[in-house]
Image 1 (cartoon, helix red, strand yellow):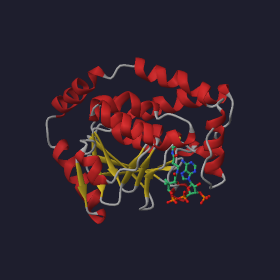
Image 2 (cartoon, helix red, strand yellow):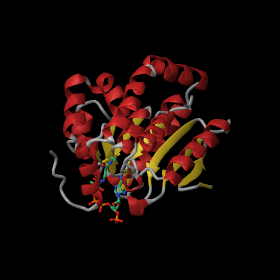
Image 3 (tube, protein in one colour):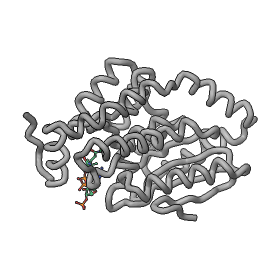
Length: 253
Ligand code: COA
C-alpha cells in the first residue's frame, strides 16, 4: 500500500512504514508528512498490528528533516508550518503501539526528531544523527523539548547549539539509541525486536508506553512554536536557508 510519498507494508503483526522520496533524502515534503499521518492511522486502526517499524527508502537517508526548499520568509508561513510539523513529529509518541525507528542513514533535523519520538532507535553503522537547524538560524524545537530528559542538559545543549554530526556509536554512548547494527541487518534486527514486543501481553506493553510518556507535557512545544515566526524574520536565518539552497557556506552577521 502507498500513502502519498510513504510506503506501508505488513509482516505478521508488524507494520513497516517507509519514507520514500530518496532523491530528496526523504526530507519532510508535503507528501511525506501527509503519508506518514495516514500510514500511522492505518497501523493504529488495524487490530492485527502490534508494532510499527519506521525507516527510509534509498539506503542513504532515514529523513533529512524539514523540506527547506519550500520555506517562505513570512511569519504566517512560519506559524502554520511549525504548528503542523511539530504535531506530526510527536505522533510516534502518541500512538498506543510501540514504534521502532530503523535509522538507515541521515537522521537530520525533523528526521532526528521523529526518531527520538519513537520508542526505540536501532541504527545502521552508516547512520548519522544531527540537528543542524542552528546552521540555518533555526531551532530544533521538538528535540530541544525532549533531549534534556533523554541525554541530559549538557549533551542536549551541545548537539542542538552546535549542530554536530554524531556517528551511531557516539549516539549510542549518549544513550540516544538502543543499538548499532551492520547496515544489511538493520531491518532484520528491527523485526526481531518487533517480534519480541509483539509476543508480550499487549495491554501491559501499551500501559508501559503510556506511563513512560506521561511526563511529555505540551508546554515546552508551545515555546518552540512561538519562536519560529520570529526566527524566520531574522537576517541570519534568511542567509542560512538561502545558503543551503545555493549550496554554499552561510555568512552570518
Ligand atoms: N530539504 C529539502 N531538500 C533537501 C533536504 C531538505 N532538508 N536535505 C537534502 N535535500 C536535497 C538536496 O537539496 C539535494 O537535492 P538536489 O539533488 O536537487 O540538489 C538532495 O536532497 C541530496 O542532498 P545533498 O545535500 O546533495 O546530499 P549530501 O549527502 O551531500 O548531504 C545532508 C546530506 C543531509 C548532510 C545535507 O543534504 C543537508 O545538510 N541537508 C539539510 C538538513 C537540514 O538542515 N535539515 C533541517 C531542516 S530545518
